[in-house]
Amino acid sequence: MLRKLNWKKITWAILFVSLLLSVIFIISRMIMAPAELKAMEEHAKVKTDYVLMLLQCISGLLIMMIPTFIERKISIDIPDSIEVIFYTFLFCAIYLGEVRNFYYLVPYWDTILHAFSGVMLGALGFILVRFLNESKHTHIQLTPFFVSFFAFCFAVTMGTLWEIYEFLADGLLSTNMQKFIASDFTVLIGREALSDTMMDLIVDTVSAFFISLYGYIQLKRWEKQGYL
Image 1 (cartoon, helix red, strand yellow):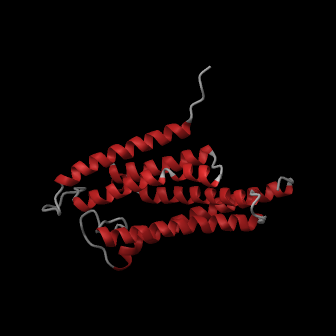
Image 2 (cartoon, rainbow, N blue to C red):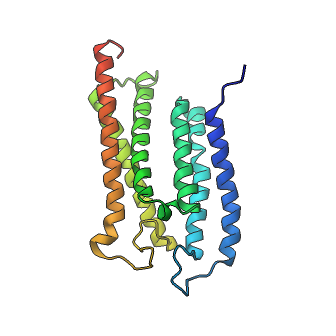
Image 3 (tube, rainbow, N blue to C red):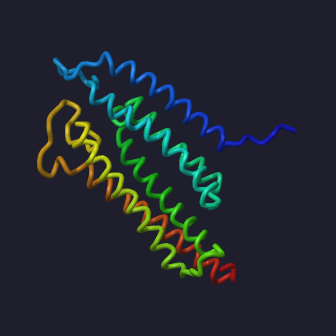
């Protein structure tokens, strides 16, 4: 009988190898890249673009270790399905998005990923509350409403912190994570300059709301059936 595939290890390995090879590739390209473009070449990259990619890949290599750290040090059991989704998200956001340029090549790629992350973070919020409810060291028993409310707030907070990270990176490293510079190198001003950040926050909030609402309905159903 064939052994069941361990998708968690497979997705982890694919992500790790992709990011590690990307770091090596980016460093080699960054050395030869010009400081600024002399011609209006579409999707051409300068040193700051490679700095952003390198930062994202290194961050990804660190972030992908978080589930293992949580399970070993804090003893929170994260379902394998959530970890597979988490590694898949990092692969799509960092490797495909930044390294393979999907943010520019695929319409609404950034919006799709933010919707995906809102759902994922909302689910993680439910897992954290379940851990607190079942922990012997705490005496917390939240109602379905407050569990869902916590999951919603957790997801929106994480989305907001990500936008703060993008803002700081753009200011300190002269990157374009908040897309305030258009693909034709036009610097956006006013409302247009805010559109990417606000769209990300709105999508994060809407997706977090729907996963929290779904979780609330499920918890109320289990409460009526006596599982809670």
